[in-house]
Image 1 (spheres, rainbow, N blue to C red):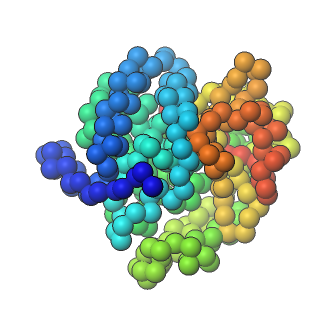
Image 2: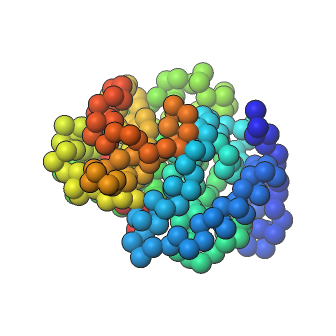
Amino acid sequence: MRFISIIILFFGLVNLGYTQQITCSAEDKQAFEDKIIEIDGLLEKDFGQTLVAVGKTFLGTPYVAKTLEIGESETLVVNLHGLDCTTYVENVLAFSLLLRKGESDFNSFVKELETIRYKNGKLDGYASRLHYFSEWIANNEEKGLLKDISSELGGVEITKEINFMSSHRDLYPHLINDENYEKIQASENYLNNESICFLPQDQIVANEHLIKSGDVIALTTSIDGLDITHTGIALREKDGRIHLLHASSSGEVKISGLPLVDYLKKVNKNTGIMVARVN
């Protein structure tokens, strides 16, 4: 397996008030430098188009599951050689924000990544990671990074018991730790007191024209205890339809061959989508 992680503490970050440990290989550090060169000039007036342009630079990057499940304690993982659906969206957003801010240094990148990935933008152990993507959307909306526009697209609100992680404790090695387990349960209890707004699958066609390239798309599910099964970035193709730019579990970052509406019909137990627009 290509990715052999090493822990690097970048002492230069301490001067910026950043003291977290980072898991990053030398290859991924070089990949960051290469990506900064690759995305130079991709900033568009329409930030959604910037997200798409940056997202396309990852096309062909292998899909790798559980890229953040490394080591016995939570660290800020930087892996640009293997992406799952969530880390793909996170990295695209982080690089796009760097472009908008005119920044290109690694210190700024890892700060953006931490802000996006963790509750209230601060890494504080395993349970501080935004494991459930509906919470990822809500928390990043609180940070002012994006807006959940599902209701504006005609979405409906539902309540659903979210407990997949705690009820499948054996699937998550970090949940062997009782403190982590209790904190995850607390996060689930919070979600269970909040409604989820989503656009049902059979209503997407009528509202597809309201979705813009660069919107974050999250696939809702009927699976017990779970909110979201997959995520990606909306892309309006030449056929005039919205497609999904995503890290596909079938192998790599790609653009869905089918329009989103038709793609969803082939996703087991899909119920619809949540849609968030980056500010």
